Image 1 (cartoon, helix red, strand yellow):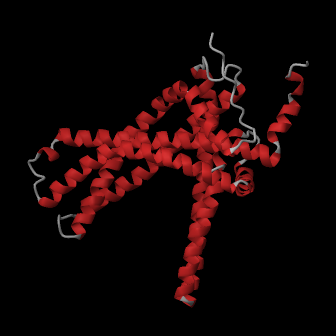
Image 2: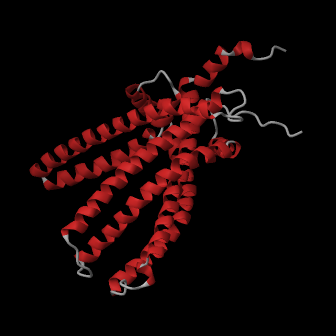
Image 3: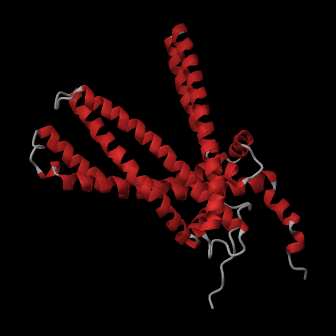
Length: 323
């Protein structure tokens, strides 16, 4: 009889290698449930997203070629380009909101259920998914509002300094970009903080994100860097078919051989669309791996800085066997 592997404890101080091993252990242990609900949610989303994304890139390339005088464009093509760009952003954000809800619903159920994700019913998942979906939308709206505020401040500061001295404006812009890079690392902890802590509101999650994030900035950087290398390989692999088809179509467009060719057929367009669906799924898979990794990092930071794991062990001390 195969011995059951110990449950992965979220709130535990970890070495760097343990963060990676626990990330892949969670993915390996729960890949069936992750794949099931990922397919149910992300395949339809990718089908819709790929439709607008493929049209967006076609329009983008047409604008580039029109600027170089290779093709002609009218106003309808430009309107279509911006419409597809807007729909790509909207559908992409909504798809990511659903993905957040799916991943953290499963993560929350894994922690509280005695048999983890085994024999998970649809009713159990749906109840947790609704809770996470609500939080996902709230968090993304908060992040969008924060981005707007930061953007307005940037425009105001850089604009005023540029009027006073153009060099000062450029320096302020470069310093702002450097600050964004530094702050982006801690902000990756906001999803797990907001989704895993029921009593934490979005503003409290934001403040806690900065506190835990800056305290463990180096660990976040290393984890996201290594995971980024892996997910980069996945994204590159899933992007290659679409890129090849798109490049061939672009070459035929530039040379003027597109009309009447196989590249302009319905079958080729359909293959290009399917390859774009694969590309979207590759992005989503990469996002799942990244979310699991930063959640493990969050558990490490919570225990190391706030002693959450120790506090929970003391709270449930009477549940341990007495020897």
